[in-house]
Image 1 (cartoon, rainbow, N blue to C red):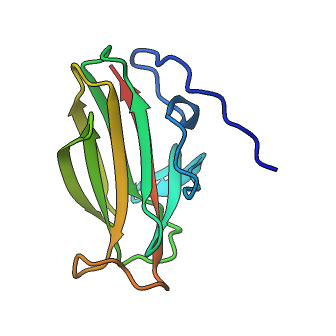
Image 2: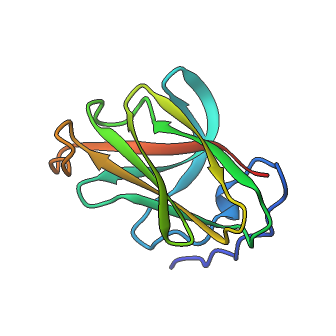
Length: 151
C-alpha cells in the first residue's frame, strides 16, 4: 500500500526548501531527503535519487510567478556506486530549457536560476558515461541537490 503525499505547501521566501516543497515526483523516482556527503561537503541535508541506465531524476517546483531566483547546489553522493559517471543537470522554466551543466563526480556545482515570471521550474538529473552516453546497466550514481532556496 502506498501513501499519498500531500500537495506541496506554499513556498516561503528564502527558506531552505525540502522534498515536501516539490511537486509530486514521477512514480519511477526514489527521491529521498537525508544527509549526504557530496565532494568536500559533508553531512549536508539534501534531496537525492538513484540515477542509472533506466532512471533519471526529475523534480519540479511550482513558483506561482512569485520569486526572482532559485539557488541550489548539485552533485553526486560520495557513496555512489560509480565514481566515473557524469551527472547532467538540466533546468527548465515553464517547459523551456534554460541551463544545462555536466557535473563530474567529486564536484558540486552551484546554480543561480532567474525565476521571475516562472511558474514551473523543473530540474532533471541524467547520468552519462565519459562518452556522454547512457551508462551500462552496471553503473549508477546518486544525484543530490541541496541548499535549495527560492527568493
